[in-house]
Structures are given as structure tokens and as C-alpha cells.
Length: 73
Image (tube, rainbow, N blue to C red; front, side, top):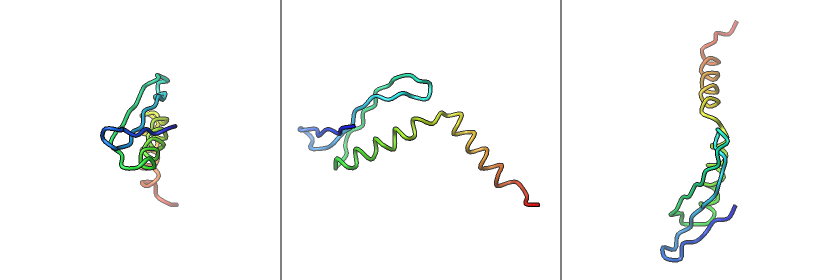
């Protein structure tokens, strides 16, 4: 998705729509990046994390914790 340059401030920003974990379409905007690359990198990471539901994150943490607590036979 594109990044935009704020002509008044000289900084980059991203503005995009995404579907949250419930399937609801939301708009996200983040401003103040020094470079276009930084803005696009932040957007990619945000979208990657937005796809994971909170219950899935908790389940992954529990599985990792249980895996560390198991004794090896």
C-alpha cells in the first residue's frame, strides 16, 4: 500500500483500511516517519499482527509455556 508525504511537516505517513480479527473493517493512520521505507515497514508489521486474533495469541503463549514445562522422558 502507498505511503504519503505530509507537505507541511516533511514527514511520511500511512493510511489504510484492514479487517480486524472479528472481520470488522477499520481505518488506521500513523504519522511522523522520517522515510517512506520506515512507514511501509511499520504498515506491513501492523497488518501482520492484526491478522492474529487475541485468543490465538493467548493459545500460542500457553502452548509455548506448556512445552517448556514438560519433562523429557
